[in-house]
Length: 178
Image (cartoon, rainbow, N blue to C red; front, side, top):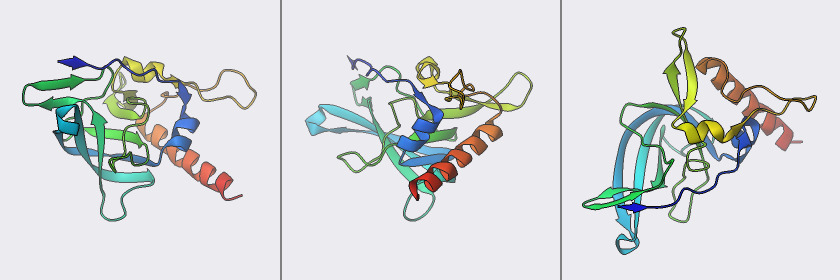
């Protein structure tokens, strides 16, 4: 078992996460597979997502995107990166992905920062949550227009969170076209 030390991830506010992401997708995990590369020195897990909605970026054709993350298991060899989300088939996700890496695949922003999922709240309504405690700690409150403490990055229901993402993408696209 190889344990790669977790990378330090700088906390980021939701608007910055949206700005830095090449692709933002709400969808369902279809499958994952592990492959060794570089003569077995590296193992990657390749994850296929069926996109229900692409807020930003997306595939040139169809509605699926494949991303990869370092770590996984091939035979007896296991590479584990602390904090790396583990995805399972049929799991609903909201992903913020990088542009393509040197191998031609996007990755989750900030190893785990860009991996979120809807979960039932105490009131029965769905809310958004990161895949692990590292994810929650890595998201800062949104900046307040007055400079004070802003709104919680994961506060509110899942539908409202998706609407915030749509609004941020629209606003950032408008600002970029100026």
